[in-house]
Amino acid sequence: MTTRPLQCQRAIGLPLGPPALDPCPMTPAAPLTYLYPVWFAIPMGLCGLSLAWNRASELMGEMALAISLVLGMAALAAYLALAVAAVLRLRRHPKAWQEDRAHPVRHAFLAAIPIGL
Image (tube, rainbow, N blue to C red; front, side, top):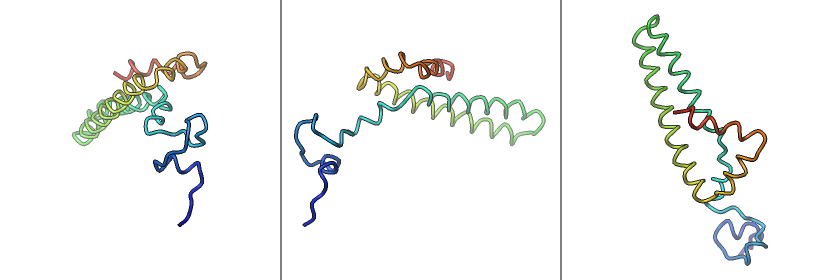
């Protein structure tokens, strides 16, 4: 029987000891701490692209309108998924939100959340 390194034991669910001594601190909820507000720029960009294709439909016809609708729905789906993840992050990791507001660069991207609406 092979033994796994200690840092891998916690990752597969084996008890290791006190959390302070845990060399593998990732928990299932921990990736949410890295969901920075900059991710909300993705649906914002998709909305802009959808609007551009919508304007192009006057020249390019129905296909451009269909592309516009697909991009708009993709933007909506991305925004809703990010909004649900952001609410979970706020509830599970409120300190991460405080760090985002205090960060010299990330705080500017908090505006992407309401702009994406």
